[in-house]
Image 1 (cartoon, helix red, strand yellow):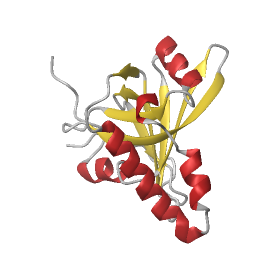
Image 2: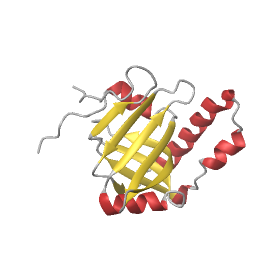
Image 3: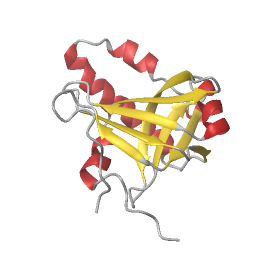
Length: 164
């Protein structure tokens, strides 16, 4: 079965993996939302799958919602510029960790802290917010089926088009 072209182009895939603020949201029945901060992500080489790295204890409700219905929305935002992409998927599922995922999560936290420290955010608070022991790390994969630019300005809300 042929896959549709990826929604993300190479530059967007690199952007979402560059140490950004990553917030994931899912809903339980009755449209009650759950939100969790991701501690990193990886994008498959074909750019068709995005895998979020999350703290299992801090993301338990979101992981349950995804297990129940597969729906997810994720916002990737660069704090210093507010450049933001939102991705949505309907096939989200928990997957096994890859060998480099704990190091990937730590590298993400280090890059995110480095972005926010010059803006006056306390490093200890940031590291506490995103703390995750390697044994508590979970991976949540999905195929981005819709997405949009959410950066403030005239392009806010503009849908992403499939990359060629």
